[in-house]
Amino acid sequence: MEIASMRLMDRMAVALVAAQCLAASFALAATPDCPSPSQTPWPTKDWEASTPEEQGMDSAALAQLVDRVGVYKQDSLLIIRHGKIVVDAYYAPYAPNIRHDLRSVTKSFTGTLTAIELREGLLDSVDHTIVDLFANKHISNLDDAKKAITVQNMLDMTSGIAWNEHLYSPDETVMQMYRSPDRTEFVLSQPMSDPPGARFNYDSGAPHVLSALITRKTGRDALDFARDELFKPLGISSVRWGDDDAQGVTDGESGLYLMPRDMAKLGYLYLHEGSWDGEQIIPAAWVDRVREGPVKATNGYHYANFWWSLPERDAFMAHGRHSQIILVLPKLDVVAVMTGALKDGYFPTTELIDWITVAIKSDAALAPDSAAQSQLAASIEKAATEQASPVRPAPELAKTISGKSYRLADNALHVKAFSLNLADPNPSWEYTIATQRLDRPTARFSGPIGLDGLYRKASSRAGIDAVKGSWLDDHTFQVDRRILGQGETQRWTLAFDGDKVDLNFESSDGVKAELHGEAEE
Image (cartoon, rainbow, N blue to C red):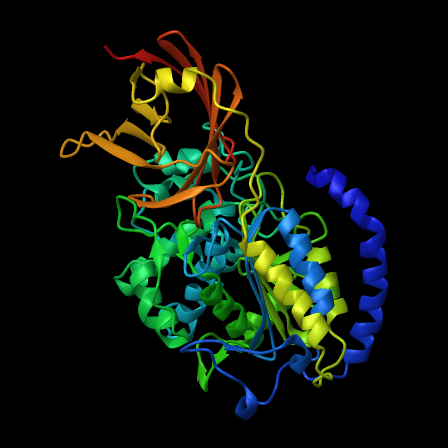
């Protein structure tokens, strides 16, 4: 069922939920935002788990939420109340203990590192002008408006710099930034479209500039700085954060990989006003501004310090493409994390808030409910069990092409050759790409492929590959590939005609390509 259709069907249910949420919100309005520090569990080593009822939540309502998130084809759902996990669901083929790409949630980590710079006195003020901080850069289009841009303008995406970013097409500003020899200088050299502070305009160049500022002020890239000043105090050790640019600057807008439980630690830090087990990691005033969301953004959201917010719901969140979410609900003492591979749009955050809110019945423990807890356990188990997609019987062509190597003409994906072994008892795939590196001009990828409607998994250079294939007709074979923990999904459609093959590639990131090749002698 398509997402748009599903939303229409959900509206009546959501309306009922929203009505109950209002009552729940009023009932809990007098509840302190967080337990006292002496009662607070700190998950530096690991999170404690609890039944929902012990934390005043209804297991049956949470079971419905787990099922609903599964319809959106997400990867994980984690809900924490009063510092304890009440829902920890993973949707097959994704599984626990796999780092997930955060996409633009990375920006919220970059902002947090900027807050640490302030706390440590490395940055004197968010009112410091950016041009002054990068006086050694050759900045083009320099006028009075650009000279007035502050660090705070960058954090709020109100710099006024002209920026186009939506579909990640080659001509968009963000993609030009990635192709530039000096990304920081590229961002700062863009012309101005508005005076600083005049309006919100989503701009992934801003967090890259602030990542460059971290490197300038600390002498370390953002990842090294984060390891010591943020990840270590929070007990986060399994981290990946892309590659530095030519100037040694970590990608400030994307590229960070963490496990969902570690993502939740950032939300928990903000839930507790920047304090962690007696240590003030970031200033409380920084979190207050995030919660307030003074900048009006888009689609009814507010923005500040690289966080989105809904102040009227007392909710704020880090948000990334394909629905990577860290959601903080201070009055409800809740942190929720979602990771996913949603192709278009985002999981509706307001509905996520509604469903969490309606599951909260009390600030104190409820009576045990074994039936509801069994229902929740069944929903979590169902999520972790992969459902086979339909498959057609293999045509005779499967034997003909099996084991053959197909050489491809030059193409945008740099794929040089591929082969499918479909007649073997253990079906497999393999392809070779041109790396454009002198020391290793080609790279080979291979692994098992499921022909029964289920993914087969294997470790590869890219991570954990999950691949399945099916015949669309007697001459067309479709391959679905995921690299688990990446929001992107890939689909390869191969049309065979004698010794020739036409391939259509499409990814959930919007990348499309047509490739052509033929069987090698």
